[in-house]
Amino acid sequence: MNNSTTQSYDKETDYLVVGAGAMGIAFADEIFTSRPDLHMTLVDRRAKAGGHWNNAYPFVRLHQPAAFYGVNSLKLGNGSTDLSSQSELLSYYEQIIKKFEESGRVEFLTEHDYLGNGQVTDMHNRSLVTCYKINKRVVDASYMNVKVPSTHPPKFTVDQGVTLVPLNDLIHLHDKWEKFYVVGSGKTGMDAVLYLISKGVSDRNIYWICPNDAWLFNRSHLQVGTVGKEILGHVECVKNAVKADNVFLKMEKTGGILRLDKSISPKKWRCATVSPEELKLLRTVKNVIRKGRVSRITESEIQLEQGSVDYSERTLFVDCSADGLAKREAKPIFSNGNITLQSILFCQQVFSAATIAKLELASITDEKRNHLTPVPHPEFKEDWPGALSTSVENLLWLHRYIPFWMFRSRLNFMSHEPILKYFYYAAKATLLSPSIKKAVVRMKALQEA
Ligand SMILES: Cc1cc2nc3c(=O)[nH]c(=O)nc-3n(C[C@H](O)[C@H](O)[C@H](O)COP(=O)(O)OP(=O)(O)OC[C@H]3O[C@@H](n4cnc5c(N)ncnc54)[C@H](O)[C@@H]3O)c2cc1C
Image 1 (spheres, rainbow, N blue to C red):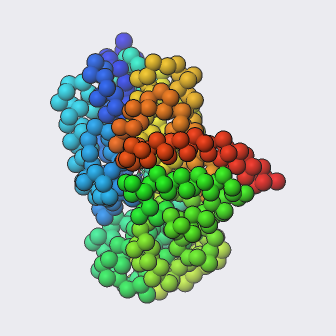
Image 2: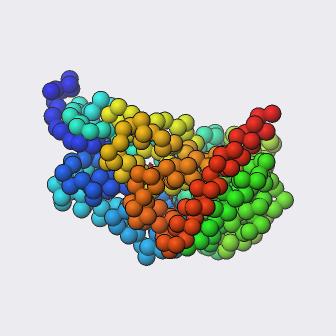
Image 3: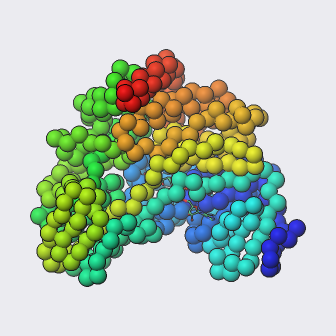
């Protein structure tokens, strides 16, 4: 079969995985471990595995413990509280790819673009198109559409003469400028501010443009042995809540949820995670500009949605405005010949990808598999009750088909609980599930009224 207008190669594979980021690799690892008889082809536009981690800022670290990140077959870091660095993550993924390739059962095509219809092109020579016969499915592991500042320039206008850099450049610029304006209040913005503080930049010289405040997870509550209790605490709060604020305010009292400024009621919720120590440092910055999003930076002023702000010379603007994980519309996960990897447990993308692979190998129909409902990445606080309720439903449903796998999967944060607690939490979630479903409907109706 030769569909290309120029040169082409016919090849055969069982799964063609588009994207060798964290999700594509977590999926492939599960198939690789469980089914030695199957062949996979992984395709990525990047030169190396690891997806967005390749272009992240050098001082990035995991935001959640390494204990439940990566792939199921290989421990990451110390396997516990460790927050792996960029280089640790990239060498981890390299190790996995090496194992894949050495087996002869996995082909990894770097700097290749998937064109659809089983066709893959070499990005250095686009006329080289390889057409694959795919025996099982095409797996879209790019659907999350992760954006990082170094690959996604800001959407606002920057006049000539203004210096704006992605936060990646701070490592060699932090001592060359006097004042720093950090644009963006998400996790990336917080990391930029923390980095400047760690380099001795005075808080007087840090200006932080925060278009929106968000509720934040307290990292110390999301550790091995505490995360199960924490999440059940949220579930309990949803049960009695009439609006999303109730859930967050109640969880704030327990210390599990934090916010930058207690006088502001955050509108956003994106699963960003900080430690209490980091929050303390972030609060030392008093020059916080809350006037909405930036529309333009001229040589003397910053124009924002709700007004403008003058600034002085010798100012470096640090771009942290990329929407890392935007909320995307859910798609059916399994469809004829295709799988679209999405979260099925809130903000747990790699566990979700491995679970989808495990379910793919289970002897059930796609109709049944699609009982698993995608949980789009949350954006607003109102998204949280629904995301939590659907996640609980998915977890309970999965226990009917793959209970032992769920219990043993290191990517499942619950699997790190002692066995008795694991079953206690599962029983409690089963009991609470109907009432939180009702609560979500109630809250939605009130919101729309
Ligand atoms: C700064 C940051 C920190 C994070 N920290 C954590 C954390 O601590 N814990 C956690 O659980 N999650 C964290 N996340 C989210 C996390 O990384 C998820 O794992 C996320 O879903 C990214 O993985 P991915 O594979 O979906 O996307 P990506 O990393 O973007 O990988 C997708 C790949 O698909 C390729 N691709 C796209 N289209 C094509 C095509 N047509 N042909 C070929 N290749 C294609 C791209 O080149 C890319 O390499 C973080 C995210 C960010 C941005």
